[in-house]
Figure 1 (cartoon, rainbow, N blue to C red):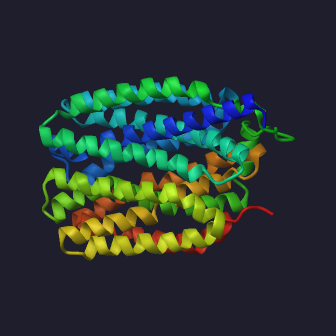
Figure 2 (spheres, rainbow, N blue to C red):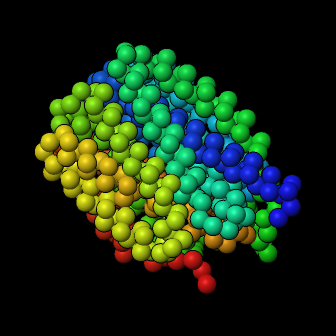
Length: 392
């Protein structure tokens, strides 16, 4: 590898880490303030779930188009533009929640739209870098996302503790995120260095539609959906369940959320060595069981320390499913963006159905008991894990 190529690869690796990390900061900056927004708008669990549904609707709108968008405009431009849109969207939420639920829904829809396309584009770039390095690194990129979420959650806990308003906190965060990401994407590798598809190029609509008919791609998508539901339920509801069902303070609830995210970060950072040594399928099966054990402990622990332990195991177990699913979808470079778009579209259905499902169950059996719905999909993920084997 020449010195110039190695330098470009190091620069692109750093750029991908930055982009993943600051998407995490943006997400956690909003998620850490969900209880305060909920209180200001006087939302029940089911109504809160419906409001959060706007994020998933926005993502589902953009994801089926994301493969074509990335193929046409490239991952660099796509991430940069979506970072600006995300910053505007969170600013709308930060200011709009003081005026009612409608501005929040509009802002969250735009946030979800931006996140969906950004997610596909950064995973396509991450898969390109992973192939150039020739070792499992995608989970570490997602660990960067988790580092961002931990940082965002801890800052959020501090903002709550000192009484900083939601408007000031989230607005400052989204400005920092936008500036950092628009600067970082300059280091991305060009997507056109990848091989082209023989017909109906990867980024074309024909290639995208063809990927929806591939059994392996669809199975990977359902697997990712199961882990996305597991991850998303923790992100959306751990702090709420701690406050409402364990009767903790808002700061303690946000700290439990941070523990969950920290565990995911640890799993994603150290997971690649396990994947390279033991393979995708055995590692993912063990982690699914770990997440299941953590979920049960969180729900039935009956004491705050046990709930924290459950959140830790839950986050550790949920850590690798989504990033390894993205890597599996991108195993063939020529079809990477189309397949990643399909898998992400299916996976994000968890965010579409998850918030209202948990919220509805929360109205009837408490949010804490409603989280047991996650267990069903974890069992499904164990059965589907063989689909993630690398093609021979």
